[in-house]
Image (cartoon, rainbow, N blue to C red; front, side):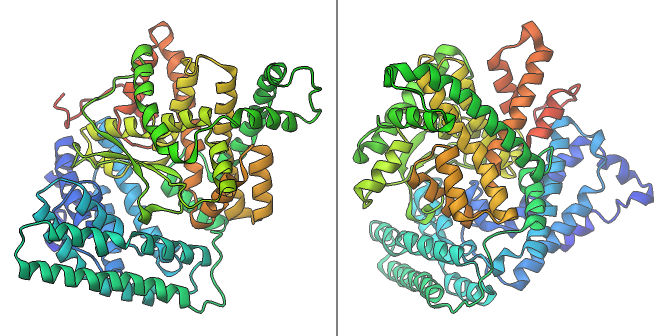
Length: 585
């Protein structure tokens, strides 16, 4: 680090040296990015592993004050280095990278010094996901990966002991989540690793060392869960973030054009618009399903009646995952037939049961390979209904009925997350991939649903459009819910009423969403915020292109910028292009 800092000491702004001139050059900035990434991964070995950078697989940092001090020092050094570049002199691609790097470093400092979630969020202490990546991804021979796994385990007992010391009046809901996720994933170490070791030709003496350490590690993880269960916490911190912290977190995490308050206001108006459109569709569908029965005077009531009828068509509990698997080729065929965008058939998509260490937040999700491991699998994680009561399973499946299941697959897979993340990994800029903006990623998934509906997916059936509106209400109400809960003290009763009566969600879905909003903050706003900004950008682009407009060209140009914040993509798409040194053009 000292050498790294020294490399930039000759570049003071007020020095007027030759270095000032060279720092304005894009090639110099690209070289700096390489240094930045090297230091980033050294300071964040788990993150490095998750994006396919495996130099530090064997390293597990112990989460203590010294580690946090190093992180803040790293952020300050990088912000100083970034300040030496004249942003507007850089290419459009590098300009975006510069701003994303700046935001990441400011965010790192804010999270450490202001949010301090290490004191109140026990779920932030969980090593299992990285170990699962090392074990399950075939980026290197198994024996090499197992040895990295073994070395990394050495610090697990110290890691969890330190975690216990850091916690001060933790959030009850996050404490419960930490217990569930750590115990849910401990089998990766206790069983999967041990089984893998026994199948190799690693010498017996070495195998014994590995298996013994795995037992110590599993005991440490279980010990942490036991500690949390027994923790006397008379004055737990509220899971509600509060308005000031919420706005700051929104600024760093979402990187939107507006504030959290403005986004909330927009979502409230969008909800009213969707209710009007849903009422029109429900009125046209009513005779088909209810004959001459009188239409209820309350518009929300008669929309709910139509939706409830359509929701009765769903798969059996045991067929949920297989039904998702069958949707993927249908979506691919539709996109090709409508020429909506180019798909890469060489990138595998694997539908799997959601791993235990991920459970308790979302029912379906995508885990994609990082930009350093572009050939790796993308996993479509599907929550299991095993062990659910018949009533709970029925409620869940009515939510993910035959119409909604198709929309879910658009959102999570094609042309949603899976497709966008494949494009993101093709971007010449690794920065845009590893510092990817969640609102852009989620916003694209929501925008892609609308694009598919507009292209006639589902045979232009009004039933499909109505159910998409209902699904889209979820994104809108996610924003309203998250902001209201964390800044305005919305109660669980009020939240469930809004989700079931105004967003037409099943009770189980609404209950799950309440759990999610109590263990997360701001992320739920990313869906609508990103969608709103992408939709506005698309409309502006279409107007400017006039008769030259093609949806495929818009989609591919937009996705070519990687997972950058939408406001930066917008600026670049409408800018007079400058050459990008990364692409050699």
